[in-house]
Image (cartoon, rainbow, N blue to C red; front, side):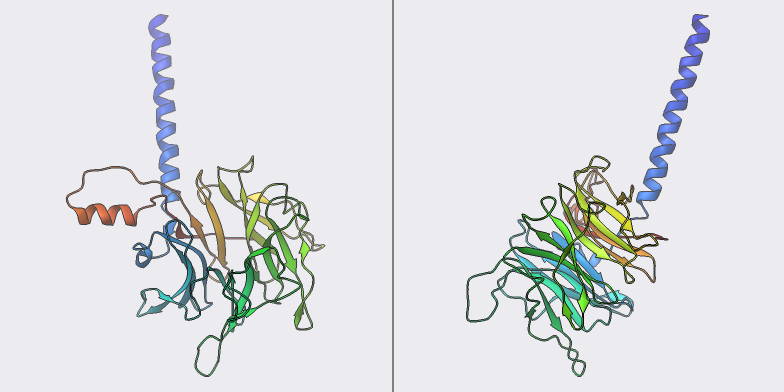
Length: 318
């Protein structure tokens, strides 16, 4: 009887180990589908806030110092099927610039900055939403223009995202919201933006909701929530869809492997190619023996190393 129990226990132990290994294999296989945007960015310690043109040949993102106190917007272009080295946008100066987003027609680039309202002032402002317009003749961007009231205020506004009809979704830190950071929408009406509307509790909560990406037809919203009970840990990506009455449904966690116990934020979804781009501080790097300093550098910089990086994965949203 004792031998039989030992055999049974051993059989169950082997089964548990097998299931564990299979589970890890499945997780690893799925995780491997989440790749870095491109190796050209591996030389930079902090990159985030990504958007890409409809033809896939121009991308804009934020590059930051390790302490995040220096923040600039950069542009890369695809030439001969390879991405060029990043170049700073010409309007970037000593102030903070982050979170670029192209309008549907791609003639306007929205972004966030704490720059003063005009060049005669040297004291930085709170964070506002700004934009530049593209000169069709020479392809150059205009000087920055503040979006102004009623969108901007004496509070901080972040992360602009614009639908096909120009409705603007963004994050605001307001004492009149539900929580710490909340998501608002400002309706585009007759060539101007209306007073921002706080999205309801199917989106916002007493915690942190931020970095909202709105779909072209405003039928789904991707955004980040922080330290939620149903989350993987830290920041997680969530999705909310509209019902037949145009009402936002309760947001749900998009799950693993996109979300991890590390920070996931700043989503951008390419609807044509069904590709999700997002920023993550995921960490899967492990120690090994290195043959040289170059080998060490390439491995550490090229891995999912816990630094803020831009990732992509195929994701079908129905």
